[in-house]
Length: 271
Image 1 (cartoon, rainbow, N blue to C red):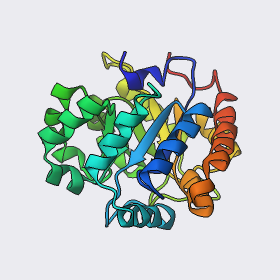
Image 2: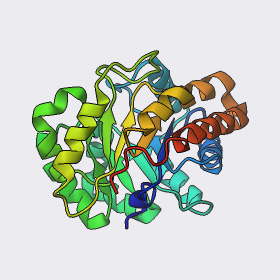
Image 3: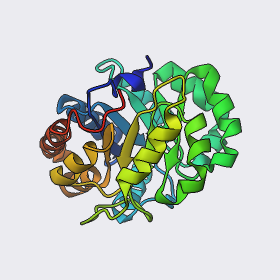
């Protein structure tokens, strides 16, 4: 079982947290990621800062700008992961727009992922039809290219599921990232469709839901449907508010959200 697969063991509900790497500094990112893992996060997404993050709302857009202003680069993020690997074996994935990866060079990027032990990559602006080259570059280095499915993906679910690796990132709502008072998408129907299409796969495909989730009640409700819950803006907002002193608030928030996710254990598992 891959490192990512272990975060979604049958009967277990995964909490996935997100931080923008280098916000407010690489040293603080290291601290906050370790605090998240200590609080129970099963997997952490590390955002690669980019000047035009089209899928992000204001909270994460501003975090990208802070990280870039602090001098964050891909090479520095690989070094961050190498430092984290001295302290944790928890699954770590990068979330990056395609431009930074393309300019770094696909083979060079995935070789460094293998060396630093980055387990997967999420690329929000990489369409299904254009994934082949990136997936082909990632495979020899054991890096999962994690696919996304949105409420608008109904006609493409079968193809998405066929090539998905690691887990399937289900976008809860159309639009950009950010906290939402209510999530109106019929997630139960969307996830049921995904599970039906995934039934014939040789490998189990965990489903994790993100975008807009920020309260324990939302996390618990979604965990009843999915294998995991992804929270980004809620964590990044705490970092924006507390800066270099965000460690304790991040820990408390993640611990509370993880408890809410775990309360849904036994609901909606694929085992």
